[in-house]
Image (cartoon, rainbow, N blue to C red):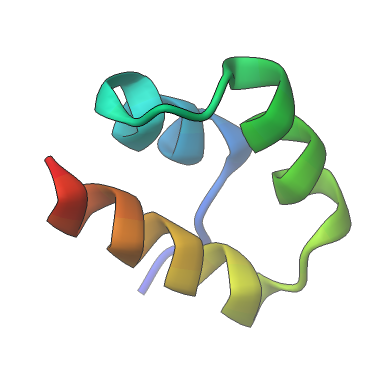
Length: 46
């Protein structure tokens, strides 16, 4: 499995109520596991 990137989170979060700046800030600070979880939540929300 490839690591989740900032761009992956931004793409998945386009339909979420979170802004791009919030998502990119989270992605830079979060661990790989946290990014994977957030990505999963955002993808499931679409």
